[in-house]
Length: 213
Image 1 (cartoon, one colour):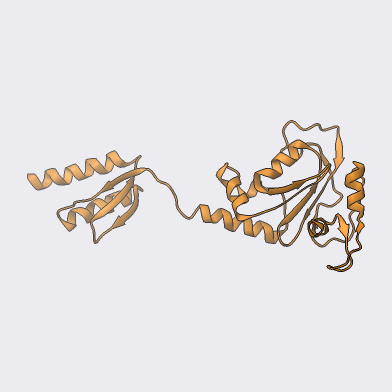
Image 2 (cartoon, rainbow, N blue to C red):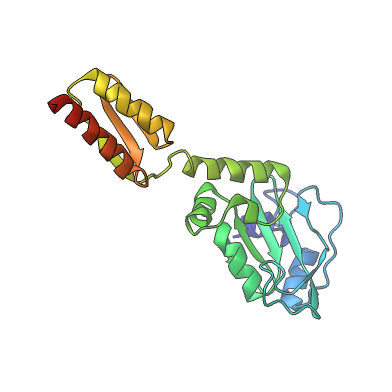
């Protein structure tokens, strides 16, 4: 328990095995319920001490007249500390952050691959996630690209061409009208978009009619 409090910055312990520890200013601020906390010299902080409007994380419905001071600290290990008691802002963070602890006016969590993928599954894009350090943004974009490696396209598969010439002609026609999605020349198979399925079918019927005549 003490190690967790030390990692959160709530207690100060000079040495790991020391039996003496002290509450930090963060601990006194959290227990007193005040939001007056200054941040100085943290190389992992972003937006420290920045004034922002209530609800500005999501924009619509914000009270433009009421301001509050908020802090967001992101460490290099993707641990995130947000000093806020706004249920709206906490809910927004929960969309892409795995929240682990909540105090009077602070929540802590970690940005993980699974938490970001959950946000992407819910329709959120990497561009919509609030401004973060460049290295974190790049990692989030890489996680987003993992989901976009496969593209779902509705269409029709054509196979069973008796002659290679018929397949080649159909493939060329589908490519010319922009309907060709995939083809395998050796197996004589091709996949076309659903929007142009009727055009390709009509072309294939013309080829078959020409062979019968």
